[in-house]
Length: 351
Image 1 (cartoon, one colour):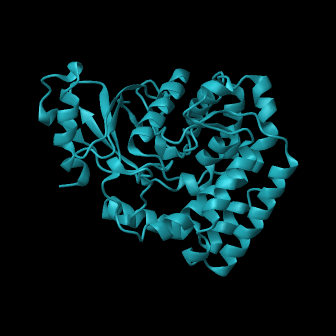
Image 2: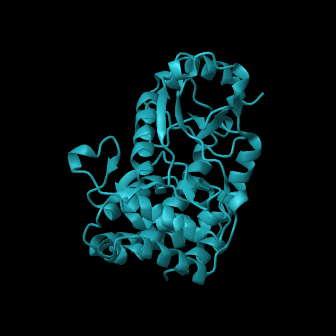
């Protein structure tokens, strides 16, 4: 029995306490296969809803604040019409350590990349074009006054793991060069306009419904930051080859087409304001990804964290926290992305 299957009785009890689900049968809850490092999904048969069950917080939040953060992401991004809505929260407790969200179930298929990348561009534009609330109303989401500088600070934090990650010297040298270049970009450019973004827009996080509409379904890392990070995350090699189901190596022309689709879907004045930041954010998003790979290589060796319902920080990259087959896949991807050949290949986008 998988870890998520073991949680089904607790999920059923918590769900049954809600009037909408009174009398629901235990076998109405059906776990989906595990596909990610941070959460699982459980279908609620007979409804158009599913349970999103975290296994950790990538934001280093406690269980309750993690759910509140994710609920805010769903609530705000769904206003663009290309993301699921949140319909409630199941409170964390000893038998349900990270709680769960009740969200729309998007019935459809995975994105077919690279030919359907323009659908992802339209979905992202629907989020990026949303009105940004006044600064006092942006909580609990991260609110970056200077998206380049603040994301660079995140990258530097993750870069602390590079030394312990056993990189090839050539990879380490090239990444160091790129960190220096990214710091210059951040210093030379004025603060970018902050938009609502997902900060996790790799192609595997999109579903396409029967009408051909793409939905971004993984929203736990949303923030007010640089729209260029999402565009990069959707099209970098380290993203398009991450998920087996959406694996692709888009050509330069296909990537250009993706960016062009996004520009056409955005208000013209806003697209113009963001244009100067798109390539620098592409470099910085890649640096975020490869330094995360170094962090995962180090942190995955640790022991699984327990009693997360009582923990102040529920981040947990332990290999014990995820299905072994998925861990093997992630390890192969991380090894690939940190190799000198792939580091050189990706940075050729801008060097």
